[in-house]
Length: 297
Image 1 (tube, rainbow, N blue to C red):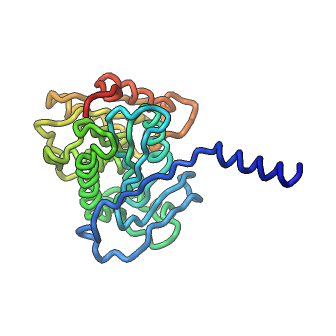
Image 2 (image 1 turned 180 degrees about the vertical axis):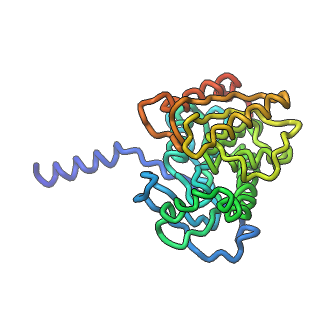
Image 3 (image 1 turned 60 degrees about the vertical axis):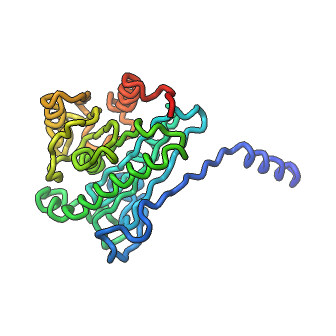
């Protein structure tokens, strides 16, 4: 192949690749309240025991916007909070991969990077793993950060609702979903919100509930989609069933999917078991509530 042919081939390849740069939105003007003295830098690690890319040392919370481009936007938005025990964020399997799936359904997605416990090395997962042996001590370490993360979640809802017209979103069709610690954060936004910053629906996926001090069901509690596995190796299956029972006892709307197998942290991973299609069941639930159909703004 001569040089001209190579040049034409490369040019054609570049022209046919669709590159969609994501918009990143800072949640606060200046330093976030409560963490003004944090001086460390956000990091990224792909070589760890979780076998997935994680983000750590989030100091300045942000939203990364994923907008539908292959189908029309339907007016629904979902904020996604990845998990990682408030030490890391599983930014792909519990973040961007979920956002891209939602985009195919016409949903505008916002992946939230919320404040985390300070990791003193560039190997945050290795720092975290020994702490997982004592959840009581881990909760004590995480306590102040959980409060900050919930504030970040509420701030995210406020941003999306205030800027709804800018993203072609119906301000009354804003959901919040999260995984593990992100599920904690999801329910923290529900329990601690006002009418102005309460999500219209929520999806805690294998949430950890013990870190939340306030667990009073709001009188106008949003519908919940709850999903987990019975064989959760962290013993969190009952956190999901208890949450479901709490919603039903309060005569609120809830749907629970409890898989026999799947463990903790399955996210968007493919394991050749039924948890591979949990996200489709979430899509069914969104469709049931007509959040996947186009409505007026």
